[in-house]
Figure (tube, rainbow, N blue to C red):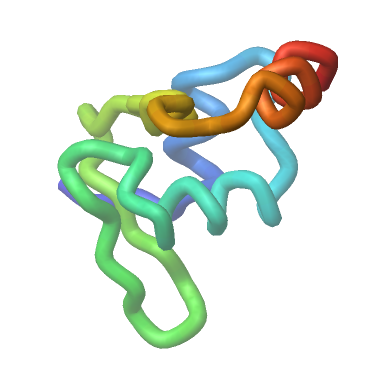
Length: 74
């Protein structure tokens, strides 16, 4: 059964994330199975799960020592 994004969040989290965060997760594919947008509402399978995106790795091959030191400082 599909439920609203907000109802799903109340079942999954305490406290639940803000609606803007939930919409961003839905749009970026971080909820599995993927929610469906019906008009203005996101509808989610009641057993769906949040799966964060993997962190991006920075490819450092071929960078100068100066560039590497800047990346390490950040």
